[in-house]
Image 1 (cartoon, rainbow, N blue to C red):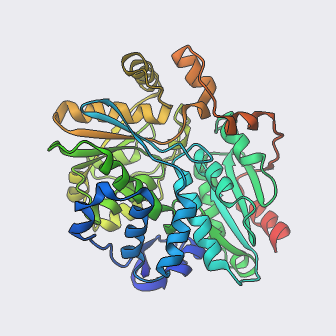
Image 2 (image 1 turned 60 degrees about the horizontal axis):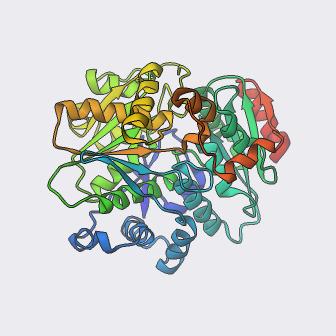
Image 3 (image 1 turned 180 degrees about the horizontal axis):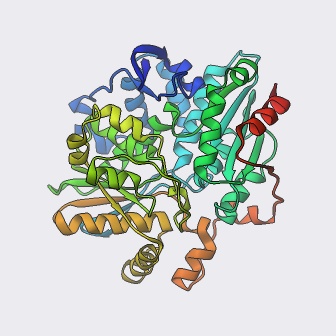
Length: 434
C-alpha cells in the first residue's frame, strides 16, 4: 500500500511511514493511492460476515499486502471486541450505536485499531514514540484507553479547558501511567493548531519521535469504515435507499463513510449534521469554505471551526463542489433545537439520545421531508451518560451510568495547564520527552 499527501499526489510513502508520521511534511493529509472496489461476492455474503471478518476484508484489499494476513487478523480481533448494533426507531429511522467500547464513544474503534497497528510496526524500535492528540471531547478518552500501558508509546492529549464534559475530562486526566493530559486555555481549534505546528517544527521532530492519533491519522479512519458495512448488513432487506446521517465535527467519521462507499457499499446519501459550527453545511450550500473560530455548544465534540478532514473530502471529489453536494447534504441546528429533539425522541420512542445523536435526528428529519421513502441510519457517537447533567436536565429523569464510567468520578484529575502559545508547548515537550 502506498499513500500520498493531499498537497503532493506524486510523492508516496508506505503505510508504516504514514501511520507514524501522522501528518506529511507539507501539512497535507495522507490518502491511499487508490481505494479498491470490494468484490461482488463480498456484498452477496455480507450478512454472513462477522464484524471482525468485515474489517479483515476491508483491510486486506486496502492494505494490499502491507501487513501479512495472519498479523492483520490478530490486530483486528484484538481491536474490534465490542458490537455496533443497529436499533430501530421506526420503519425509516435507525440508530447505529457506536458507544459500546471502553470509553463509550465511536472513537474506540479507530483508537484501539491504531494502537495495535502502531504497536505492530513499533516492535524492535528502541526509541520511544510520543503520540500527540487534540480532543474536543471523545477522541482523548478513546485514545487514552486504546494506548493505556502500551509499551514504548507515550500519549499527550490536548483539550480545551472548561469545554469538555465532566466525565469526558475524567477519562483524559485520571489514567496516569503513559497518558498525560494538557489543559489548554483556549478552544479545540487552538489545541489542533498546536498539534499541527508541532509536527511541522523541525526542532521537535528532530529530537522527539512524534506521531498523531487524531482523525488526521489514516490509521484512525480505516477502522471507522468497518461499521458502515456492519450497519448496512443489519438493516432489513427492502428497496428503500439507505442514507447515513453523521453528527460531524472534524469530519473523520463522514470521510470514513465515503471510503466505504468508494469500496462499493451502496450508500444513497450522506448527511452532514452539525451544530451552529456550520462551516461545512455552508460550503455545501454556497460552494465557499470559510473556517472561523468555533463556538461552544451542548454538542461539544462537534465544536470545530476548521475541520481537518474536509481536505480529504475535497481530495476524493477532486475539489468539485457539484459532485460533493450530490453525495453529501448538510444541516445545522442550535442548542434549543437539540434539546427539543432529545425530549421528542424520548417521549415518542423511549430512546435516550446524547446531544450529538440528537443533532443527527434533526438532520435526518429535515432530509426525509424532502426525500421520503428513504431508510436513514443515524450514527449515535457517544453514550448519553457522558453528558449526564445536561441529559438528565433535558429529559427530567435519571440516566444509568455504565460502571466503567461511573468509577471515574471518584478519581483525582491530573493535568498540565497551558496557554495557546506554541513556544510554551514546544518547550514543555522538549523538557518532558527529549
